[in-house]
Image 1: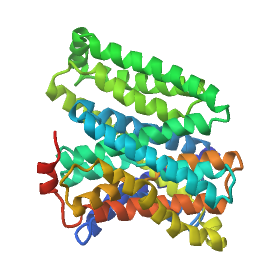
Image 2: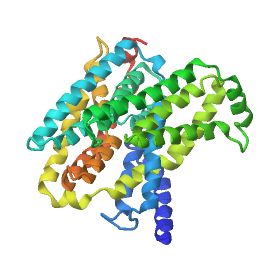
Image 3: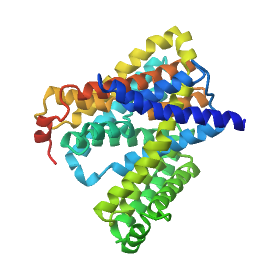
Length: 398
């Protein structure tokens, strides 16, 4: 079994190197998000095609760490002080509409069964951790347009996590809500305390060890991640909720570190996340994708493009409500496409549904396949012809 793990990890590492090479070569013709190559190459080496890599406990554990770090980075990169109250309200209102639409449509697709709630929640997600690197690479992350996408994505990532914790935890909704409230209070108090108190001694220790083997800042951040993920698991909540909260708390703890040192720490965290763990998650997503269930089930094949359209209808259109008054149609379209880009939470929800026998393998494969196509197509279409969104930048309030 050890030999299997070693060979599998070696191939995954090779795929992780080949993916950006392929993205760079094809990028001369058309810009395609890197995660698409990671997923597709994962499918190629996985059991569905070549069969070189088979998922095992070690690869699954690394993949879960990658998913945790993806959500941590999403939470860590959000600077809520940059968002106007109006923007957050519009983004939240849009997501609530998505939730209602998604649940109604999901139950209808499930033939009236409450199992359709799984489909509904999956359709309300926005892959903030996936689209933020795309926004950064395209130069849009710090623009007003990028702020609008980030606000919509933050709500579209945090909202489904709350819905999963309340409705898919296996508890009564009232009990689940109380447990969730306890977790939010503990996390919220930790964040409030971190923001209120100065951290000069901590900042001095960070600076003293930033370029030594001590690496105190990185160790502290990883401790925060592990602690909040462990807390969420202990409460019976989804671990991604803890990872997202850890990102926000880590940003608060390091608020007094100098700007240059913050940039250095961010680069180190990006190296750990996007250079190591996150690619393993996306490659593993391709490896574990149940292509056979999708191909062998005609109904699932039909549902795949339907789910892709539903992502636009359920999540994309309400997500565009966060656009400011006076925004052009092209800008609202781009915002809708980014809002409808979902994959990690879709993977998480379908895994929960399969474990609880609440979804057929073909349906799960169709949903994940739609998420893959969304990651491939929607960001690409969102950035076509309007890479800097100049009008949006003037229309959107800071």
